[in-house]
Length: 196
Ligand code: ZN
Image (cartoon, rainbow, N blue to C red; front, side, top):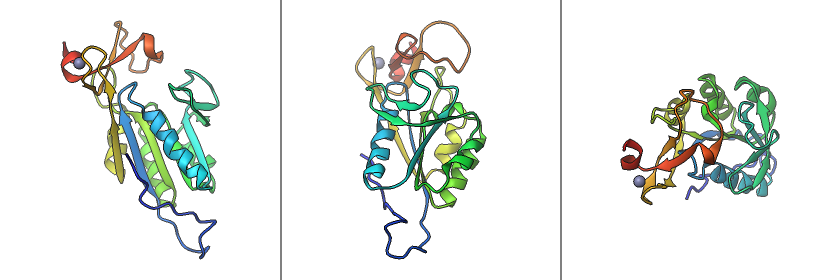
């Protein structure tokens, strides 16, 4: 389990002028691996520590709800949908922790945005699919993994054999990389079952 290296709280620190150090955490994995649950767990801990937390997600992801990050087990945190990654820079303001969910749907510029936020002293927690349904690295995720201080890969359970799954297998023959729809369209599969 990921343990935060050091939670700095600017407001509560004895020396108000101390410059806080930011960093980037990436939580990646397949569908049904619990990425969003882990993101919510970390952000909830920060909220309990009275840190100012903002959560963003690409406006393309409207599977369940426009305003909330909703994980599969229905724990909810309010979030702000944004069209472009740069919008996060404008909206993050003076918050201590920035959460980014479904990061794979942003374009490559999200990498520079996260880098800038971390350099401003913010803790940036990014969750996203590391591979698309063909098993290829998904959008900006490889670059985000490279620049992050901390990387957590979470796994699902293979629907076929019960093994460790890190692929998102998709039923049907549509070629579009972005296809939302969850359980009826996808299942988590291990290496052997994915390539069968
Ligand atoms: Zn399997």
